[in-house]
Amino acid sequence: CPSGTTLVAHPADDPNARFCAAGEVRQGPFGRWHEGLPAVMVEGGEYASDVPTGTWRTWYPSGSQHTEGARDGTGRSGAWKSWRADRTRESEGDYAADQRTGTWTFYWPDGAIESKGDYRADERTGDWSTFYPEGGPDETVTYTAGVRDGAYTKTHRNGADAVEGSYDDGL
Image (cartoon, rainbow, N blue to C red; front, side, top):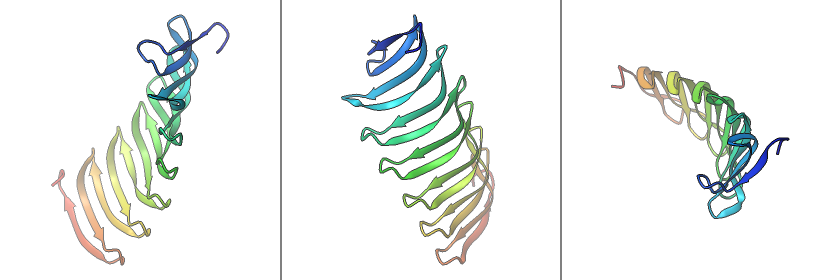
């Protein structure tokens, strides 16, 4: 623990947590462990003046890493990555004020791109593309404020267009 702080282990309101604190203010390393699995962390990171800050990570009960990214006074911020329990990459993108923003990419278990598109204020926006596990295009659809709204194209696995159309406010 940093100078001037003490270790708080198993507080009554969070019995699986351990952290450093100066009085009631968390300061320095923080960790929470899985219920019934005292050797496996659920999440870990740092606090500065009772605010989560810096790089935070979460883990599955198996011990494999689930997520990694930065936190600040507004929640998740900046680049975040996630993995499946089998350790294959699942997604990557940015957060601002604890909401997804900008381009996000989601992956099939073999590492090929499953889907890709933009978020604004945690809602899909603009063109989103999904892909077959083999890598070819599956569909492209336009979103406005999280609702399908605009051009839509569905493609057969062989690459031929299957359906073209459009959505108007989700319909």
